[in-house]
Length: 353
Length: 179
Image 1 (spheres, rainbow over the protein chains, first blue to last red):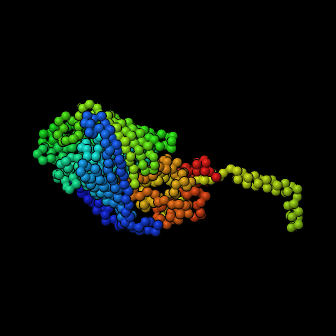
Image 2: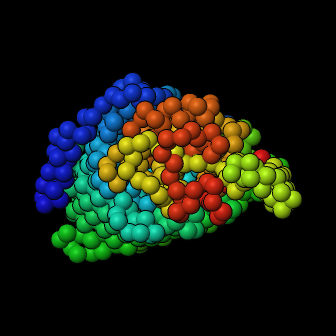
Image 3: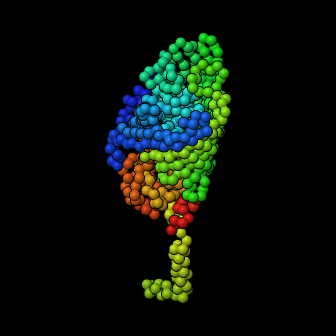
């Protein structure tokens, strides 16, 4: 409750601040401005899976629209909409819908539906396939996956911290937490009367250039009909060096769930390490990459319905053939639930528009 | 007296001194033509006159240009104004500040806006004049222009305490574009 009150007070102060409504100035654009951009991709997939009907196919990637509206000099609206191909239709999803009040570098307050800032990938690339080096997301942060809570409905405070060359930043959030379907956030309301709380701290030091390291802690309560409530604590650490010569991204997360009455606990963990390098010749067209990843799910884990143990690596090559178009080829050698390894080959055209 | 003075100035001794002065002046002019001044082609960081800052460290300047820092210490929002591709100023920014190719620079801003970390990329301008016009009227604006194009009276910041005309300045022009 204390967190809620603090958040409510800060949001109110921000909303009432006359400086937030300072608007219009010579040389500035007309407001409200409204801009669209988007991402999409097409994939060809071939595998040695046992089902011959699924051995190779084309897949229409997500069609993603991004909306930015500059409402006033310090109020912005961001939205991300996705259309995802299903067997008989395209499903539509409001992935993000965020109104953001920017007071200064040290305090920005947002309300809406977010990608949960509990790790790096989830908030670095969102649904922009073209932005990420690889074709696939790491299994731990897969859309529709259950390991990390991908979406978060609530409020977030974020900003810089006075910290000299370490350039620290923080993100603090209060939201509905996981829904009864734990792959989803509580979009229409909270499944229980317990808000999820998260805190993320990170550093973007001056040197090495474009390095970011950080960690987060997320607390929630999971409630499902007919089952014992479980307290969930998720801790994560990450390192992302985006300079491309090399690019190194590594993340680790651990989820501890404990039954409220039984006290039984279940610990699951996941991690990955991805390395890429932008080759200097041929106008820096090519970027080879590789990633190893692993998920260990606790024995008897009562919440995950689709998340299982998994392990594997991938090797790929990205070619940026135009400013906003990338061709990627990727070989994945992966295993789930202790089954034999699959070898799957992907070719993708991804782009921004 | 006047006659005498005139006579003295025409003495062989005075003529020799004049010749030496003329030689020094000629040498200076010749060297000036042959050796580029320290600021030749360097880009100057120009801000709106209302910005209450005179000097930035290179690291802070980079954070501003990356939009990792979006406000001046007074709370004024920072507006970035950047020249269009192939301009000297943009080349210097890409090489020295962003350390990115043109393609990666565009990708950087698409990602920055997509993440919600900035509502827009830098304002694009086609000439130094346009950059200077805008920086003069937008509160909190910052731009970089060829140091030779900066007229008197505009507010030029020092970077790490140095002006474009000083040795060791952080934003010199690339070797092949120095005049």
